[in-house]
Image 1 (cartoon, rainbow, N blue to C red):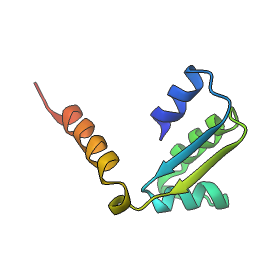
Image 2: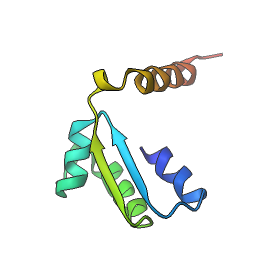
Image 3: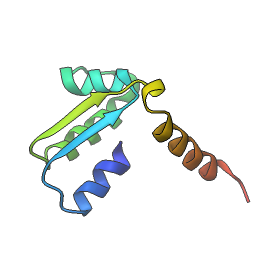
Image 4: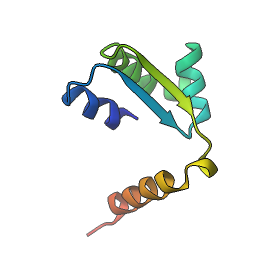
Length: 83
């Protein structure tokens, strides 16, 4: 999500809709909850979110978005390959 927000900022987008399969993260962002485990990430996301108007965060279950999940997993696999 952080990378997407930074890319949107760099692309000078004005509004944004973020879809995520992380229900915990989306609830924390939408309801203003603080979570010690991810406090730094939440703060960074909230800071970047102020750059967009409007911005929304929506939970999408992984099973309803298998193509995006496969793409994200593939990207993570590439990052974890040690050469």
